[in-house]
Length: 205
Length: 293
Image 1 (tube, chains in turn green, brown):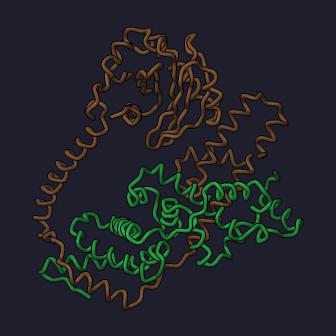
Image 2 (cartoon, chains in turn orange, red; image 1 turned 45 degrees about the vertical axis):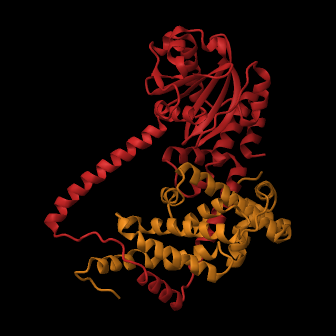
Image 3 (tube, chains in turn brown, orange; image 1 turned 180 degrees about the vertical axis):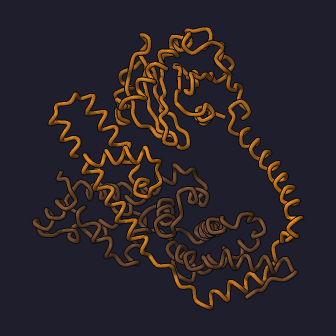
């Protein structure tokens, strides 16, 4: 623990520890989802914290610390990817979109919520790796890390309209990836139960 | 097929009305993610609420959004090991401390804050000036900049007709869809290329008649506002002297009709008029994105 003192650098260190370090757990999770190993993710997070510390005097608004450190981590991860090659196992977007369209236009959508709710983290991470990084990052920053659209726009340096479309399309692609991985069999159930669910949702098609 | 479209068939609406409803469905469907996230203004939420009542397809798509979002929200943070925390602390200790901002006494804080604000404001002003200079068509090294129309819009038949048509279009359902672009291309004698700019997305295309001149109409979504591009043949575009004067030397014609902004520029064998209830600078930026540097 660093205490306040007349040394400005120690005050700064205290502020850094109060504003940035508490986000270490979520930052590490974000890095793990886009790294080949936990060790690689830890290296990226360490590098991000060092860069954040070196530039910490430039952070003028404490309220912006969280999006600011995420932006630094994304830069580091991008640098690492360039250095070590891509980690994703991308699937053609059109195939994922087709799977999503089949989901909402077919007979499986009534069960989708239940199937998704039962997926473990490993399955979620595999699905996220199948969609392009820009879409996955936008969806994760909102749905997992709890950022608002305006904050995500700051983190990824794109207009808010782009964030909106990336999140919307990213979720569709993710649903398509889950559909493809689970297979149609996972969504099958007796016709009576399906009809009951549709009735409870209101509105037949 | 959705409930809404089933009902449409049942009530024997016209093909144009059916196309308008389909167009609205396609626009609102794209907003369902933001709707699920409560990131839309109340009036848009109300539109989607009303649409969802009659559209099972959108209700289904919304359930997918909610399901994915709910599951991802349950993801747990990682548990950093004590070793990682120690490594990070050691790595930070090993680099020079950043240049610290002095922590002055309260009275001085006020004084310095004012100075700092002044400096920051000056820097911001310079940055803003640079940004505007980059975004302003006149300053990016091209020959022409923006030039205001030297006559009321209503006195130029082509532009007056376009404003009238835009007013009608903006107050009703859009009559065309983006995938109709090929049909529009086939229907007019001049080339049509949709505009391309950040945040600009083609919603629909159709043909119309502006004061006797055939025109292609392309509707776009720009930051959740509607902007409409009218393309006419070059002879129609250059007919009025006020238009010729404004666009001479590769300038961009700008005009306003109340809160409605209008910009126009000539193409290779066409003329484009872009209209929207948006700041003129937004339309000028689209032109800037289109023009070669």
